[in-house]
Amino acid sequence: MPRGLHHVELYVSDLERSVQFWAPLLERLGYEGYQNWSEGRSWKLGDTYIVFVQTAPKYAEIPYHRCGTGLNHLAFWVDSRSDVDALTEELRAQGTPILYSDRHPHAGGNGHYAVYFEDPDRIKVEVVAEIP
Image 1 (cartoon, one colour):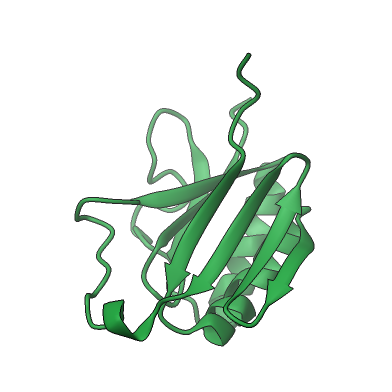
Image 2 (cartoon, rainbow, N blue to C red):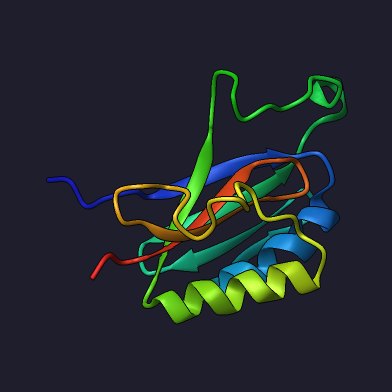
């Protein structure tokens, strides 16, 4: 019987830089630190966890691009539009560019109220409020 997503694992070019980026965001979204080892870190919310692993040197030269085959983006729910707005301001304050800023916060269409941005490896992240 299906129970939903178990985990997502992402290989990253610089683990420490990715941890600095992702830890505050995931903790803000309710995730808690789960696993910690020399080549990786993970955060868990309920039964689902997200893992970041240092890319092995022999694969590090192959650049990631979200428009190529593979992962395009990760999207997370928040409770309200004010949560999206507060996160957007924090991202701007830390210098994280907002994607589709000319259409923000409605870049997703269909009544979506979201902020879109990229992590240090240019993996797109979407944080979206439930449509009323």
